Image (cartoon, rainbow, N blue to C red; front, side, top):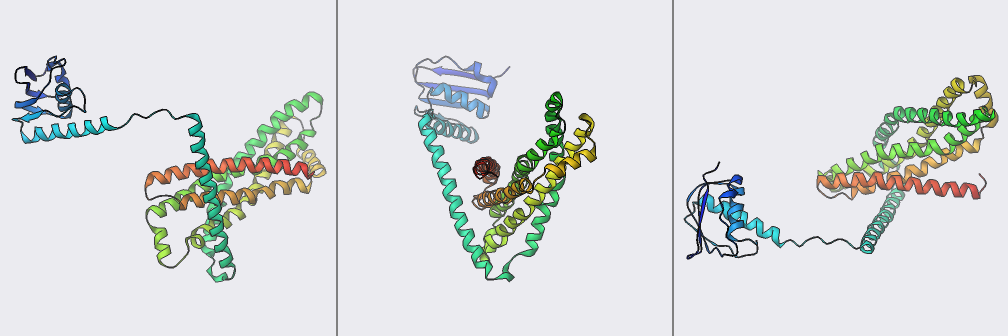
Length: 364
């Protein structure tokens, strides 16, 4: 129960409130209907919080846009609470309702966002190319320690997850393919299909996806945090180029590490398929290796390895560009990191589709 009370003097248009006004005091309000409250009297008010203030104001002026009634005999702290609630109620009422966006307008807005990303990436490539040309004439300006540190981070840290993921994918692919091949007595041809799938498609694409989610996101977060903490501004103040100090070592590290990771993924995927072939299809390890040496072609291996630097280049460009375009707040770091992963995955899928069509046309 609450001791909150409210009385309305219709002749004078005065609403008198007394007692303690909190959220449970709503039952104490009289039914005013369309009557106008010109004055609020708080002489008997003992306690008031924002809930109680909102209840009183809602009764005194049903619409937030209605004029504020006069405040009479309120203690200073109670008057301050009423004025604060009235101010925020008016601000909330002044905000226009969000209308549903037209589908065509949404398409146009998203197209503009995509165009902005593409133009920004092209501008970033231009600045980076200019910086690379300048560094070619100054070998002493290359950041070899940073490059070595990035190679260790990108390559060394990714080996366990790449090897484990590709091993399991090799197991799954060989199991599914072997289950079908066994029905036709074509067990040995599982080796052919496994090699073709792992070396040409599965290993380069899966490794690129893992690197985009692991290293690409980390690069954007690192550069974005440095932007927030003004470390990049400090590098520029020292007369150094952020592209030469931060971007180029990371890009070269990715270009070197990706083919190596793809090769490790090839070996792990073949090892997983070999295990299933021995257990499920009665293909011994020696038979598997004999078939592998008979059917494997150098171009099959080179196709997968050749995709890796292209994937690495686009992941590095997107990650570094999004990191450097971060604004000076933590939310922007999170948004740009997420955007890096999404853009990198889309780029990988598009590039892989282009490679597939191109290799078919070239009969590779």
